[in-house]
Image (cartoon, rainbow, N blue to C red; front, side):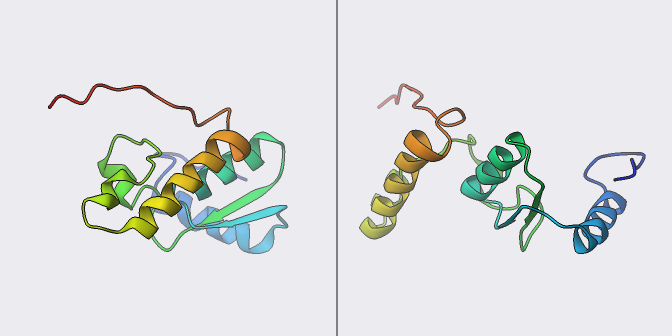
Length: 114
């Protein structure tokens, strides 16, 4: 990849990286850059694999950019009665903590004032 001047998140850099990705072989293609996809891409790259990661939107587009960047267990879905989504989120968080990325995701205690 040829270094480009300016910000690493510029339109020129994005266009260059997309063109490069279209003609390069990769070991892992990650589709979706939510917390799980970003973690998978980071882990694969850290293991020396060639990674291409794509998302329908720009990096940090979704709700994580508005929050504390925590991988939550889905408790926020309980307020709206979405038990299925809360359960799925808790299971996914457990997988991240125990198998996929225990070196990146771990429990953080916090105080909740009432």
